[in-house]
Length: 287
Figure 1 (cartoon, helix red, strand yellow):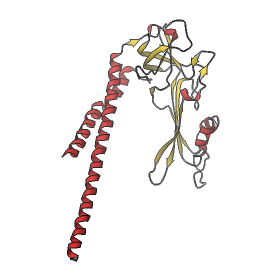
Figure 2: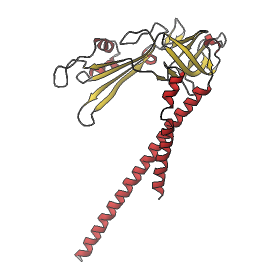
Figure 3: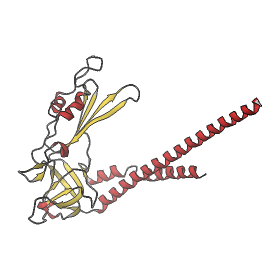
Figure 4: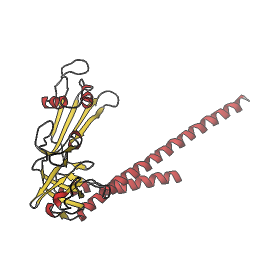
């Protein structure tokens, strides 16, 4: 009798183990499907962007019309803007800050980011143009660009590394971060400044990106009439920005050929690799 009970317990334990194994396998297969979809989506999205860049003719600033436009030229500062740390006259800037987490799960963690479309006031009344905008200038004239909601693909210009307080978590002396970063932190609003103060005894890295005044610029986005302008829809009254109808705004300081080369890398690997993962996940679930 005891042997029968023991055998039933062994069978029950084996059944539970097999059930757990099956559930674990199903979870792995589902993750394969999800990751495959993610990879395919990313690849297809980039493929469509590349096709739009290739198929959209380049417009001149003076002859741009309402709709999707591609522009190439020189970035020009609007409203006297400068990068907040290096104080370089620029058309656009972005700041990213990370702290280093040690121990389990060690690595860099983002705690602050901002750009020229966020930090500036909502509107510049004197120039009647949205704050954070810049001009793209070519040999025919210039056109206003609003980078808000856009993808801005530019390389990092400066990396600042160190400690805000000059001391680590245990009071040991460490390299103090550049004074220009400390000045930037001091000029922030209270909420943003607190994010840095909370990391004052941790190693941080602050990255500064910008499109300097006079840099080459490439813009693909929607040309729309500027708000508050009622004197027609000539190019001088247009602004290039993100718009739901085209759902696209791409800004870079690279030439079109270099941009296409960068965007085209790994497209088909993402698409077909995602398709392979998707197929493997579904096949494993169905067999």
